[in-house]
Amino acid sequence: MEKILVLDFGGQYNQLIARRVRENHIYAEIKAYNRITSDEIKADNYKGIIFTGGPNSVYDAVSPHFDSAVLELGIPVLGICYGCQLIAYMKNGTVSSAENSSEYGKTLLHVKSNPLFQGVPEKSICWMSHNDYVSKVPEGFTVIAETGKCPCAAMADVQHNIYAVQFHPEVTHTEFGRDILRNFVVDICGCSQDWKMESFIDDRVRKYRTELEGKRVLLALSGGVDSSVAAVLLDKAIGQDLVCVFVDHGLLRKNEGDLVEKTFKNKFGLNLIRVNARKQFLENLAGVREPEAKRKIIGEEFIRVFEKEARKLGKIDILAQGTIYPDVVESGKGESAVIKSHHNVGGLPERMGFERIVEPLRELFKDEVREVGKKLGIPDELVNRQPFPGPGLGIRIIGEVTEERLALLKEADAIFREEVNQAGLETVANQYFAVLTDSRTVGVMGDARTYGYTVALRSVTTDDFMTAEWTRLPYDLLETVSSRIINEVRGISRVVYDITSKPPGTVEWE
Ligand code: XMP
Image (cartoon, rainbow, N blue to C red; front, top):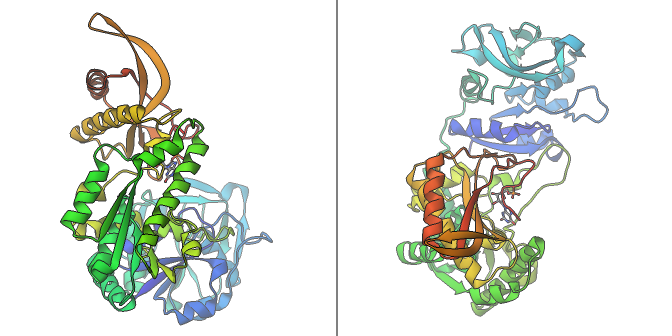
């Protein structure tokens, strides 16, 4: 398979660069600069290398460097921002820092005719974010772009296919950024653009059919996008040798457990075991009010139930997980690899003696996982499902989780989600749900005094869930939701809307 290496020097946009490459149907892999060598790059047959940006100055003692042999491999290279300066440094050019040379934000760019800028007008807008700049290009290089403040906004050694840009072509603010990256990966690197989701599915199915022949594989299906897509994909490869265990802790949203069972067991014919464990989860949660304690109880109980169920199945060889690319990307910032296992099954392989773990979606970004899911025929409501925390409604009930309070929240939450969906706002609101608070307030209904719980509605608009804005939902919609909840859910007498952004607030209340 043809692939591009995104060599990560700790820049904040490394995943975005990989996404942009993949939009051209070319597979891109991110590797931290300190976890791959020049020899390994050569052996891996990359068609091109992109050096990412990074927070450092090339002259800092601690700044990330790389073996300059990488520039002699004959593989095309594109350096971005810090990556541009690093190339200049590696090739004995000069990088300078002058007070009036730093640029931040949208900047007018002038380019010269060049393979990298094929189809880019002489003047356009680019996105800059730098202090240092290349003040003298290395031998063999020419300046191919400039801005008002930066005499070398891009440079190239066309003969050796080494290019470098001071600006960020991967961000949307750079008007022709997509074209520039396309010119690099398609025209300069010569990739043939055959990385498609259909071929990904066929590839994987073929691979697992051989690799897992005669093995029994266990997967914890949560109903979330990643585990669902992993399950259907593996089912295509090994059918009944895949056993999916769906632990229904009772803290799912209204009708969700049934939907998961109906879809995967009945429609897809998966070998699925649903464990109805609501009662025991609630028993364990009785009297517990503290959020972290609730999380811990739910997580541990999940493992206990899952293990018990798995033991009943006899010998299982392999554990499958829905890990996706952002969970496994190693960052060049120096911290150790972040490998997030499904929070609910972490620790299981050692405890249960599996031969190994299989992660069919390990190379994919979330939107690619959704695309695979759609191609596999998984219904939209599951493929486009908003994020839902592992501990479920357990952390959306402030205070104690009881059968009655769970029922109130499920109803209120279902009404809110139904109205947002009906208004077609689910693309504006990225996560929206109800929270049952522990405060009760006085109300009147008819002539009678009521004394019920307060429900808070929470809706956030965000790209990455690291920061989030509260969604500006229309007043009329909020009014409909409020009035429906009060009228339809006996026991709730007040509805409020949460207008806290993140930070300082978090998305969830607990
Ligand atoms: P916060 O509340 O941290 O949420 O702003 C960010 C995103 O993470 C989800 N979240 C969780 N997911 N287990 C999970 O699997 C948890 O304990 C948990 N807590 C928060 C949250 O729903 C949001 O999408």
